[in-house]
Image (cartoon, rainbow, N blue to C red; front, side):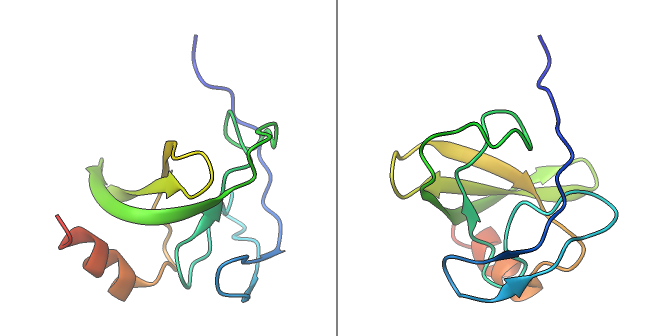
Length: 101
């Protein structure tokens, strides 16, 4: 059974760096484009059904098609999670994550 996707592209305030994050418009924003942190809120993309609500810290990068995925570790439950890199993500942090291996 495939993963279900619920499109939610909304503004939020990053719980890690405090910056106001605006909607993307072309797809769903699921992480801060400044510090790359996210929040552990979904079971399936966009469903907001995960009760954990921990902060997802970016720990690595992996190649995905013509782009990359950011690999996260939840600071609350330690689960690993992946989000695709977005056009306006902080490229300096993406590079730092790519050389951490």
